[in-house]
Image (tube, rainbow, N blue to C red; front, side):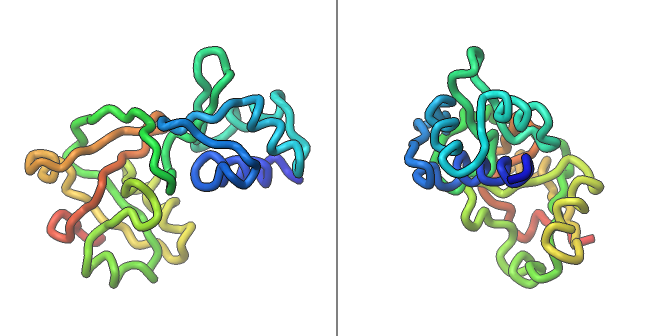
Length: 177
């Protein structure tokens, strides 16, 4: 197994299915590091050194340790109900959302909804949104009128790794590029 494959497996566990290796997350999404290592090591080569390397080298900074490295969690992207203790933050006037062409009709009809996740994920700039959109085919970009949304009562959160999160983005706040 490559480090990348192990990282993807860890993401599945910490964001969606901790039961895959027989562990559970607390209400804030934290997993016990020792239990995580034992669980992953049943099917993948895994140790504290490998875990630390994944966390340190992850270009999206998906994971955080607590201060003494006994607990770890995914910073965002969960499909299971956890409270990662996000602080409400005033967004910039505009944020970006990148998606694939196949989702445009749905977005144009119902806006951005979190689907299987807890939040809609937004980017601070067009370049990042393009990279996100490319994961889903030919990229399509939307500008999100985040400042206007915020002034009208919508809440925004900024995850530890720089992804903007909100519960939904109604169509009236979207400008397709």
